[in-house]
Amino acid sequence: MKKIVFSLLCLVLFSVQQGIAQQIKPFQKGDRVAFVGNSITDGGFYHSYIWLYYMTHFPFDEMWMANCGVGGDTSLQILKRLDDDVFSKNPTVLTLTFGMNDSGYYEYNGDNAETFANTKVAEARKNFSQIEKRLQKLEGVRVVMIGTSPYDQTSKFNKDVFKNKNNAIQRMIVFQDSTAKANKWGFVDFNAPMVQINAEQQMKDPNFTLCGSDRIHPDNDGHLVMAYLFLKAQGLAGKNVASVSVNAQSRKVVESDNCTITNLNNNHGVVSFNYLANSLPYPLDTCSQGWNNKKSAAQALKAIPQFMNEMNNEHLQVTGLKGNYRLIIDDVTIADLSAAQLSKGINLAEYRNTPQYQQAATIMALNNDRWEIERHFRDYAWLQYDFFMDKGLLNANNEKAAQVFREGEMKDGWVAARKNLYDKMIHKEVRDMYKAQMDLIVKKIYEINKPVDRKIILSPIN
Image 1: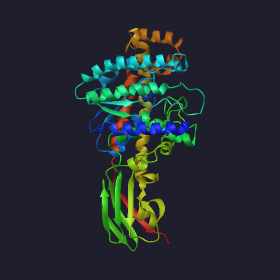
Image 2 (image 1 turned 90 degrees about the vertical axis):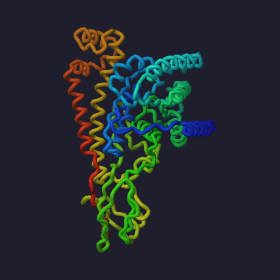
Image 3 (image 1 turned 180 degrees about the horizontal axis):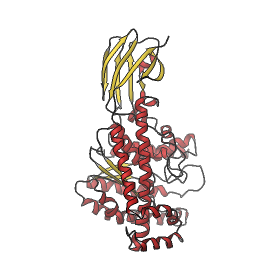
Image 4 (image 1 turned 60 degrees about the vertical axis):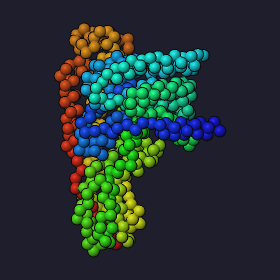
């Protein structure tokens, strides 16, 4: 009964949030987007998945996006690095999320949990008011507040739970939302809908979570859910990769949404036409990416099965046929289909062997490489802002800084873990090389992400 009530409460909360949430403006060609946050942003993929959507869905609208997360950050630490780490990147769009670290951890299982939560919420509000003042002064920058992904306090995969921690996070999200409205900023909440999804899935599997093995850091599937929620808030749900409907018997194009169909023929039962889409399908990685992750992005479809229909629909419908047909695209056999299946319509994005999906998969692979290189800069950023800044050595990269680092690694495991990285990135030439590699990858992506004219053939199977 408790599970049912909890699920219903989550559903109500999510419905209310969806009803009042401000739709945020989609990114535009030329935008420079900075995603600011803590370790969930720093080591996460939601921003990379969002950019991948724009790379494939809007291949002609070149833009740039940056991970501006630093592991362990609170709102106060974000405030301290705004100028050097965020504003210096000259963003036209800035998204901001915090709350996981601001809310604290072990104290929720202590004797004064409620008092502690009240203190942490008040501290976060105070720090955020200072951030608000800084953001209000920005010119030509669209600000989007993001209610952070939840701390999962309901999954049963172990008994290690900080009781009611997410309740405090949700209180912080309330003032983030109200501040966004007061400033006419954008706002999208990850927390409430992810809590709802967790509750629904935990009714079937009590050990399910979108929030990773520590209840804090979403796995790849959780990050795709976050990207989906963000893109949906941008009003992009229902925008087809392409939609094609042809009548083979009358040789007529019934529909061609976001694509161009030419040379439609029916030669003795062999139907063929040229198909030039304006977008590519969204590739779903079936491999786990990132440190300590165990799930793939594709596994998010268990939690958001509507993703394919809403965000990744490459619809093909062919009517006026009888029997069975072999679908061939650019001489590649895709599938054997019945006339009934073709009349109902299929989603080509579900077929990973299509040439256009393989084109998109190449873009995904390159984007993953870009993400890996960018992670070097975020670990380097952690050292600069969480280690060197308070010592007056921000961006010093000199022998004194190296000596302080060597002393620090003897005392702090987090510093020691970055030794190999720092030994390289203390050198400007190495940092420049990594940046050049990322720029080259992005340039290559925008060279190869343009859809090409495909030849589609439906050949009768005897």
